[in-house]
Image (cartoon, rainbow, N blue to C red):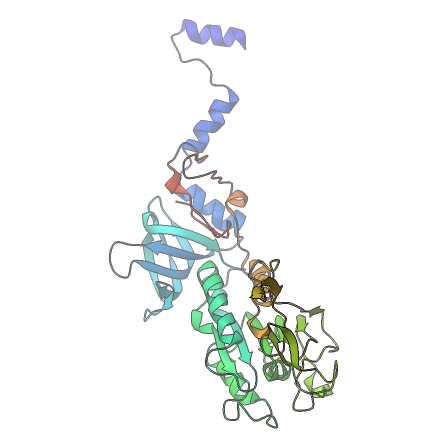
Length: 381
């Protein structure tokens, strides 16, 4: 090697590059086509991607799923579906088009060569007497805020429903299954992912609905479920699903926080008056809730009472509003969707970013790679 170097120097040629320098130059010369092919084939194992683009014209933000058939240095060409504007459903039909790579802000893998994000359905069913604002409507808002942009889910596919649309306050009525089924089917006939969540009589409706949907639910979340006026569980009420969780409390139907006092107690851990059913066959996890928690699912909610800070007790009438329960539901659905949609991080694609000031992007500017929502969305331009 020394002889070769000496020979090159004597011929006024450039000295040999060491191995690190060679690798660095190869990475610096990596073009857009190579990066996208690596992303689509190696990371995604699919030609489908959920893409968000930022434009100067209106609407500035477009989200869609795209089957990418052709890649050039400056463009992507393919079929585009589930187009939304600024996170809301738009009036754009599916099309076959070419987009500019420079406009792409982020991208996430599709699943198995088929667009499935638009087929995700999550229904949250409120209990008897629940109005237009309750724990289930709050959960819908939370899930929309945390899932739609990450996975490209149509926000209208995450929705609230009453357990019985015509007899919402009647304790002797039965869940309106045909209406609940229709609400799912008018959105997606055969969901790629189906989650059903319900509180009180809404939990009863969730159990019955899980038995008749075309696709068995991926997840069923029950929050202090009540099975009719005597809370009697029958074989026709047993829930079906890949994963079934039940959050329950036995503090009482209702109570005061200051002083902490139960006003209406639970009459039984199973059959009884209006407290959630605890011993449901087939449940994967039964989680007892004593006090309400914040979104981190660690910190208890508190109130000031007689000069002291006291924890807020869970009752049947407020457990559906518990941020800790909502966080656990979100975590489960989020983990399911990560697997379903094969979300990929920057590291898996081979790109790294340390901070906006310090970028390890092969000497490119920090804006070339964007890491959003804990590496669930990625930018590769």
